Structures are given as structure tokens and as C-alpha cells.
Image (tube, rainbow, N blue to C red; front, top):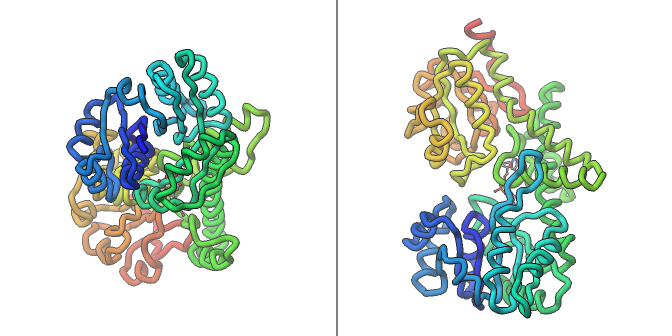
Length: 441
Ligand code: UDX
């Protein structure tokens, strides 16, 4: 089938490429010429495992195209999937500017009936509104239908998540739209759930917000573990053996970041207030996460009365491993605090350096190895559990640092190993190891 995809961000690009891989002929549209030029050379503008290979392969086999020419791409398309961003407005609501821009462009250029599929995460009721908007703007005699089809991919595993999705959710009351979308997804052999558009929109928010809630709950319990002398790793292990709870998304840390959880929790909370209903659980998840971000710095203040003039090693800056994305990464406000206090910050991240440099172009030293970042450092923060950081021998801290004070926001190391290595080690929801009296006070 011939499919057009609007937007070449995480959702749009991965969707388009995976649909091409499944045998459809896909044209991806984006207004940014630079991105399209890269894609036409077979290079992905985003860091995502497997994506470059799939782009090259499907371009070569002639079923994947990239263009900025939206008029040409939309005019005769029978199925257009919209995967543009819906970022956060200042008040927490979702910004639908890109979505409506594309909807208008499609309506104004379409010369045949088409099905518009909204994959972007959108507030409940948006599909209805976009359909009404497009019907207002489309040429007479042309029929436009809008169906919801939310995306559940996670960054770093986006291709795998799309090719092996746990479910395909289709929101439509129309028999024809349901049939068309079922046909499109047939090669993936994944369970297909059909429901009303508003329910489909809600599935996406409820899923993301539930996962965010799970993380905030665990972080809340972790904080309590610290005061009552329990160990969150043991606690979550014990919890996860109950199959009703499961073992996923129970990793305590310095909170969730990324392009989805922070934005989608705030958007649903905002929407609930608009509806006159307070979504208390989601509100609590947001509040816990805001505080959790600064948990490590608070711990470091127990050992250092000031960070002025100290060399601080930062291991990992991306919001999670497997991506170069820094959106809402806890490392950003923490590094800002350290810099404001006059610390000398030395950063190591295997792929996040380029994006971190855009935020801190001059104030931060970038290093090319863990050892280089740690060398002669007074203290170290671990913000991202990249495998090479998590799996390194904990002895490296003592070997390289001036004073091995380590604050681990992702519980990478065993308490036993930290104790044996003689490092001063504080993590999340676990007892501190080899504590010493306040430095430089
Ligand atoms: C998420 C959802 O997983 C995905 O289904 C949705 O489509 C988009 O949002 P993503 O933001 O890419 O995906 O990353 P995810 O792996 O879910 O992690 C989000 C954040 O939660 C990261 O900062 C991660 O470090 C944190 N996290 C995750 C925890 O703190 N603890 C956990 O147990 C799991």
C-alpha cells in the first residue's frame, strides 16, 4: 500500500521506516531541508539503533522516499499518517501547532478522498476536532476521515518496539478506516484493538502516565527506605515477584525524563483540570519527580558544604541510555546548579556530548573516557546508566579520583563492591557506604 507520513521525528520517522520494511511504499515529509538531505543520503538525523540500516535498505529497494514537497506528497495520498511533535506549552497543555499546520496543508492540497491517521500523542477529543477542521478546509466533494492510532515506542528501542509492538490501537468508528488500518498493520502480526477515537487517545496518555506513576511511586518508597534503613533494590525485588506488580519500571533513581513522561503527565493533568476533575495520582507523580531530580545534589551537600572550585565528574547526561536525547534529562538542572556554585564540571557521555554542548557550549569540559572525567575529581555524579558506566569496576573511582565521593542516581553499583573499593558512596533508596565527615567545611 502507498502511505505518506508527515514528520520525521522519533514517531514519524520510525513509523515510516518500519512500514516500508513491512513492504509498503512510504513517503516521509518534513519541512526541514537539512533533515531530508541527510535522510536521502541514508543517514538518520536521530540516534536510534538499527534505523540507519533500515533507511538505506528500504531506500535501495525503492519503497522509502523523503521529501519537503508536501503538496506533491499529500495531493494524491489515500493514507496520511501524522507523526509530528506535540510539545508542552508553558501551562503544561499540549501544543498542537504542528498538528494543525499539517492538517491544514493536507486539507488544502488533497485532490482525492483520504484517511488521516493521527499517531502523535494528542489530548482527548483532538481527533474529532481535527476531522471537523479538515472537513471545513477541504475542497468540495473530497471526503476526509480521521482515525487515532497512538504510538508506544520508546527511544533507544524504537525500531524493535515498532516491529514487535505489544498492541496496535486503532480509534475509529468507521468500517472503511478500520479495514484500511488493519490491512496496513497486517504484516506486523500484532494484536489489533479497535475502539472509539477518544478511548484510543486516552490509552496513550493512561499508559504513559501509569508508567510515570510507577516510577514516582518507587522513588517515593526509595526515599522512605533511606529514612527507615531499608534497601529499595531488595524491596522492589520482593515486590516484582508478584506477577500482578511485575518487574518493569520499578528502578528507583533521580526521576524520569525524556520527551514523553514529563510532557504527557502534565498534559493529562492540565486536561483533567480543564474538565473540572483533579487527577490526584498523576499530580503526585509530577510532584515527586520534580523533587527527585535534585535528590543527588542534596545528598552531596551532606558531604560538601560548597561545590565552589571543586572538580566534579559527571558520568552520563542523556535522559536514559541508548539515546542522544537530553529532553528533560535530570543532568541539565543539576549541572546548572553545580556551575552556578563555581564547580568545574567534567562530563563523559558516549553519545550525548553533542547535544549537551548545545546547552553548555563553554562552561563544561567534555572528556572522551570515563577515566579522563574522573581524573583528580573531588566528587562524581552518575546521571545515566550507560552499560559502560554501569559495568565498569567500581575500583575505577578510587583509582582515578582525588577523593572518591560518588553519588549514583541510577543505583549502578553493589553496596558491597563500593564498600570494598573504599569509596564514599551514596545512591537512591539504599544505605550510604563509607560515610565520612563533611569536606571543605
Ligand atoms: C516512554 C514510554 O516507555 C514509551 O512507551 C512511550 O511511547 C514514550 O515514553 P521513553 O521516554 O523513550 O519512552 O523512555 P523510557 O524507557 O520509558 O524511560 C523514561 C524515563 O523513565 C527515563 O528517564 C528512565 O531513566 C526513567 N525510568 C524508567 C526510571 O527512572 N525507572 C524505570 O524503572 C524505568
